[in-house]
Structure formats: structure tokens, C-alpha cells
Length: 108
Length: 122
Image 1: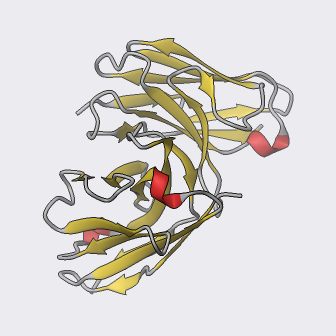
Image 2: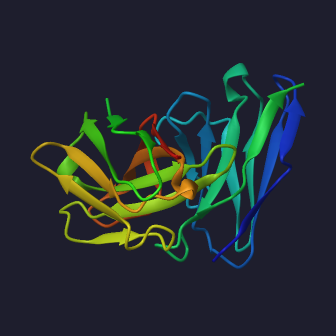
Image 3: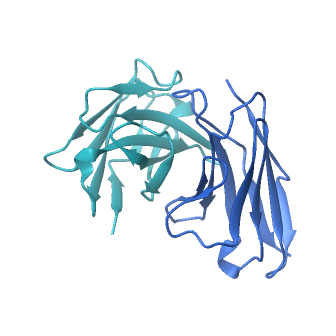
């Protein structure tokens, strides 16, 4: 099983600041990684797929980068609605899909 | 707009069964693979099952293989998850999710429902 380790567990930032979230894979997943946003009581939202492709309707302030084992989700300037949980997910060895443990972005 | 609405969750005793449903609207359901993903309380996300657009190809995670069965009715735009021999560790919020790509599964999930809660407890 490919293990995805996300860091930090919690990121405390203010609106307008830049958020940098990390996801490290236990073995190479090439570029086959996605990022999701989860908010309590809402449907999860796909942000990024194939490491750097923004999903439909996702604002440009969200960007993804990386390949192999190291990946980053960057939110260039946090909006109030961006404070949420974020998960990475790999599909490299489907159907053995795995998710990371999540990063909570909270208001400082 | 794309909508996925899960139902069928509830409290069930260990060893019991439950069938979840996911009603889809706003897109051509028969063109997309569909998935179930779950989240146990206080835990991360776990992929459960996938079914191809035509319903012929199904895959399940090792943790539910032999106990859960995914199916779909394209005439009713509905996805199902039959859960048998339920265990305490199956307690979770169960989401249905649409695959990103039409026809061949991408194993990325571009639309999700809000989930239905399954609690396995005596």
C-alpha cells in the first residue's frame, strides 16, 4: 500500500496569507495525485488532479505541484471560505487508492 | 447542476446488513464510473468500491471484499452499495462520488454527495 503523509497536521494562518501544504508518498506515484477540500456538512470538492491540473471551477489561487514522491498544494492568498480540511489522494496503483491523513487550515 | 444524494444509512448491529443508495441527477449517469468512499469518525478518507459506467466491471477494497457489493441501475440513475456482515470498523460517513472521466475510470472523484452515516453498534 502506498502511504501518503501530509504535513503539517494543522496550519494556522490569516486571510490573505499564503498556504503551503505538503503530501509525501512512500513510493513514487508519478503525477497521479489529487487534492480535495472538505468542509463539515458539505460535499467534498476536487481541487487538483494529476498533481497540477485545476478541476473545473476551481479558482486560480489554488495550485498544485510536484511529482514522484513530493507534492505541494499552494493557496496563494487565503479567502475566508478556504479554511477547511485538505486531503491528497493517489491513484498510481489503482484500485488500491489511498488518501493522506489530511491538513486542517484554520484561522489564526 | 450535478447532484448526488445518498440515503439508506442508519444504525445496525454487528453482522447485520444495509443497502445504501445514491440518486444522481444533472448529468448522463450511464456515461460515468461511480465510486463509494467512506470516512470513519475522526479518521481520513478511505476508498471503498468502483463500478464501471455499464455496471460490468466492479472492484472493492480489500477491507470490504466479499462483504460489500456495488451495483447500479442506469435506468433509474441510481448507485447502490449492499453491505453485509457489517463490523464496528465499518462505522463511517459513506459518500458516493462520480469519476472524473467518462467511460474509463480515472479514480479521481470530481463530484461527491454529502454522505450518509452508517453506525454499526450493538
